[in-house]
Amino acid sequence: MPKISSLKEKWNLLTNKLTDQFADGDELNMDGIIYLIGVQELGQGQRTFKKDEKVNLMHIAICKLLEPYGYYEFDYFDDDAWPHYKILTELPSLKPGEQTVLMKEAIINYFDALKYFES
Image (cartoon, rainbow, N blue to C red; front, side, top):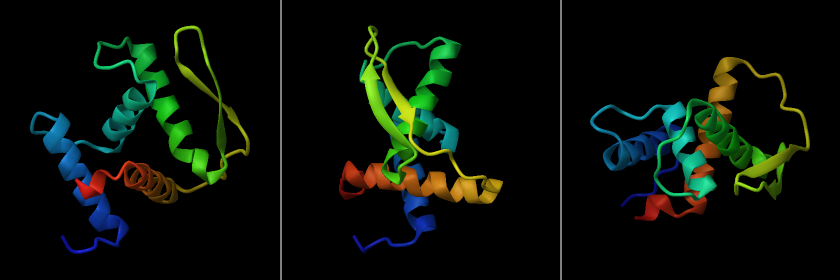
């Protein structure tokens, strides 16, 4: 497979692979991918989550994704084995397009670390 270097190419590859793997025909958007990362990071397997748990899963994912950038640091697991993070640095004020680019880069880096693109 040729080396994929641009953010757009990697993002398209990632969304296509994840959509094929987890969605029923509808392409996964960024929120769906962040949710999947939260489920993965929680590590409790596939189960039904309540609405507030879904919000917490997305928070876990965002903390995990932004941890390498120095914004968050893992703190502890609570009694229900949910991870908690502490804020190290406040997020900068970004325009919506800049937020999207940051999150796409963070998501791609996350899946790169898992060697997801190599499979």
